[in-house]
Image (cartoon, rainbow, N blue to C red; front, side, top):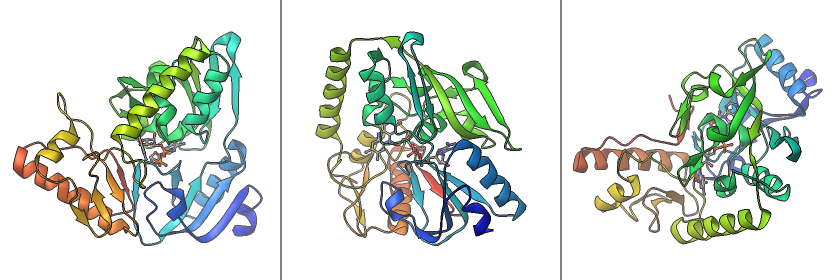
Length: 298
Ligand SMILES: Cc1cc2nc3c(=O)[nH]c(=O)nc-3n(C[C@H](O)[C@H](O)[C@H](O)COP(=O)(O)OP(=O)(O)OC[C@H]3O[C@@H](n4cnc5c(N)ncnc54)[C@H](O)[C@@H]3O)c2cc1C
């Protein structure tokens, strides 16, 4: 099977996943596959299906909590699906799923388009970002997506228009019903002013540096903000800032971030998230929704 797979991408066996997620935790993947192109991804998926091998699609690993045991199956990393086409005349950008959001934003600004400045500090990919409707400062990706190209259950390419996709705060129909793999998207934007966009981006960057523990590995906000409140405020009110399990710590700078102070394991992060959830529920009666996704924990 490996001989077949390598025709369509890079393949490593028992590869560590530690460098492929922003917590820098986790174990290995039985197969780590990086497809060369969308077409090659389809060939890879068919080979995996024929061999009865399960798979997981990995973007930049910035919203997941991996297990430390080996993932039995294939982790498909989309980093080579990084094509991007900017059409300033049509006020549109087409980007493949593996394009990093900060790269998408810089291409947008360099072409004097505007809209996605809010995403410049989100360290995820187009695919992962759309899947969870990433957002910040009251804006979200789905507001700017005109269509999404996906592979369906039969690995056929399908284009879903904006109105075919349900979304709300940090969620989409892709997340609710995992039958599609996102391979590319079109973003509709507006003509902008490059200098103005750069100023917004710098302002947002400073706000993040001041409020978020960017000096340590993390996966961003652990919990969604409940209606009318902030998860960070609730966690802090329970006295949990600085609480740690092993090297996983509730950040002293922002209580809705859990940071890896050095050698945190997957179990440390997993236990700490569940502990914080329980303490907040017991003390405040608020059942916080976990934003980060536990992968392969059942
Ligand atoms: C410092 C920091 C700051 C952050 N700030 C923000 C923020 O302001 N706002 C925000 O919303 N998030 C934020 N995040 C969280 C994270 O960056 C986003 O959720 C991001 O969109 C996740 O994208 P990813 O590519 O890393 O996805 P991954 O973590 O790799 O994957 C997440 C999920 O998406 C699925 N997925 C990935 N790609 C595809 C695809 N092509 N097709 C189908 N499914 C796919 C995966 O299977 C997985 O289930 C932050 C994270 C960090 C570390």
